[in-house]
Amino acid sequence: MGQLDRHSLTENAAGAIPARQENLFLFLRDAFSEIVSGQELTDDLYVQTLCFELQQAALADGGRLIVTMPPRYLKSIAASVVLPAWVLGRTATTKTLVAGYAEALATEHARAFQKLVTSRYYKRVFPGSCVEPVVNNATQFTTSAGGVRRAVTVGGSVTGIGGDLIIVDDIMKASDASSEAHREAARRYFDETLYTRLNDKRSGSIIVVQQRLHQDDLIAHLIEKQTFRHLNFPVIAEASENYRLYNDFHWERQKGDLLAPERESRETLEKIKAEIGEASFRTQYQQDPASAQSTMLDFSKVTVLESDGSDIRRLKVVQTWDTAVKDGPNCDYSVGMTFAWDDERWVLIDVIRRRMKFGDLKVSARRAYEEWRPQLVIVEDSANGSALVADLRAEKRYEFQRRVVKGSKEERFAEAAEWLESGKLVLLRDTDYFNDLRRELCAFPDGRFDDQVDAISLFVKRAKSRRGIGDRGRRNVRR
Image 1 (cartoon, rainbow, N blue to C red):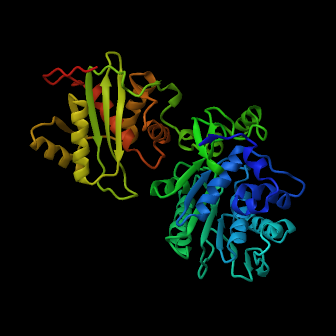
Image 2 (tube, rainbow, N blue to C red; image 1 turned 30 degrees about the vertical axis):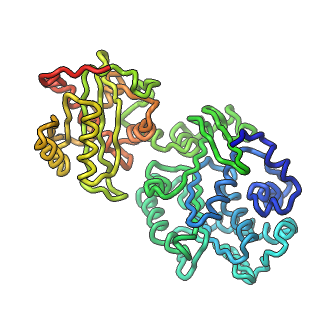
Image 3 (cartoon, rainbow, N blue to C red; image 1 turned 180 degrees about the vertical axis):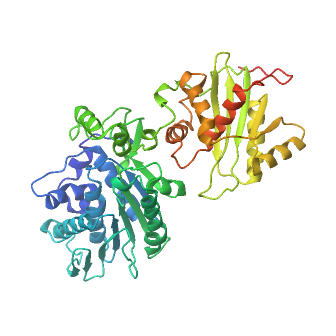
């Protein structure tokens, strides 16, 4: 793939009507002035990326896409207004459902859609689209060819309504995000109402666009399903990212880059942060709600090494396991952690975090033991944990110990938080588990998952005890 020049895509296709039928961004660029009178759309790379991903998901059989991005960055116009119009122009019988939380906003988007599909520009791009309406009101636009754009709101009835494309656009407002009842209502509405409205579960597409609102919002629920592609746009890039674009181009966004510097500068973003607060800024603008919710751990005090662990001295090695009872898609994870003493401090060097059946759990525990050769393996004394210890001890090759945990999770983690903040236990950044671990640590005790927290607490409790971590009669020094 080639490196994208900001204007290479738009200039090469300028003025070509067929290109606008095949390229959602080119269509959006000119349609924007029809929707928002007197304004022109800039050629921001994030808009091109957004359009490419929306187009791919809408046209794919069984397309599934999540888009998370800051407020007022064009997601609703692109996804809820322009995309349904573009799809309808290509296939006159397409039925689209657009779901949101507010009736007034749904009406505003419906009117913008109607304004676009009845414009001269639209008829030039799609001259044979058959969009003459037979129904045209605040919630529904139905064409003579049978195509439909229907607006629905959370809690509203959708009985008898079906869609080839479902677009979910912010179905929960920010002020409701702290309510578990509202979050559960959004999850249930998606699972039990919206999803069932697909005319064909194999070929129908679902697109969800939203700013993050809570670590346990609808986006977290959908990510857990592992069936959605996730396009994430923090307003300030926290890591280098490579985004797909049209014509085999790509956009290489570097760490620290602003999403649209001409729209909101660093100075402007700092003002926004000062006005709404760090927590809301992290959640709604950085799309990282977990990092904004910490009540027990000041992550800024945690020592994080720029390492993948290959250069860590391992004078002692200890493993802990926090095992889940079940392995279903909504169940807890089983977590195995490996800690190494480097003669100055303990370093978390490996994390296994998966939903596993008991047989797979035993295989993972054996492999982790053989790879790291720990002096001690501590397993929380739970149903699967006790069975794991019993089975592996019976093989007479592994040194596993059960440990009964006492006190609340918060009480146990308080000791672990002190070790993390004081540098007695440090983390590694250049690992595939660091981001998930950081989010869980920062979200505790209000986050959805706490299995990694429990595994760390289990280790610190033993390391602080009078027994400590000994060699257990053998040397196992590795570099």
